[in-house]
Length: 130
Image 1 (cartoon, helix red, strand yellow):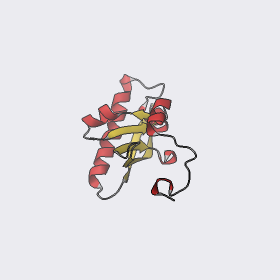
Image 2 (spheres, rainbow, N blue to C red):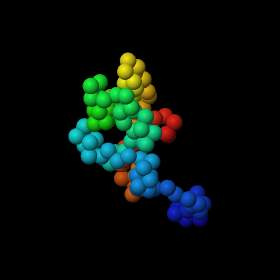
Image 3 (spheres, rainbow, N blue to C red):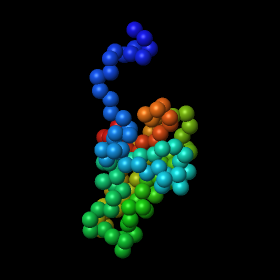
Image 4 (tube, one colour):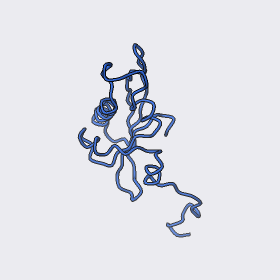
């Protein structure tokens, strides 16, 4: 057996590029760069739809916007990454206004690992997305 198939024949693969094209991962690289990240960065669709997109019933009069909520996630991810050394994942919490007068605190994971071509990439997700 060669090292190319040390674990047997590949039955199926789903690439990061396919997940982005399918909408399972949301590319936020350009915004992440403005927050200090220098690798390709995505958030899972689950995190994006539940906590980055502004829930109905909230508008700018509540100080909510998609860009502001993404800013919060990326800023907290950067703080967690800078505080952690020698690990490929960090955990942090994000508070999100879900409706007038009700916030929700959710744990989020930022994981750096290999991309489709073994380059470092960052995925930010909810624990159930891992």
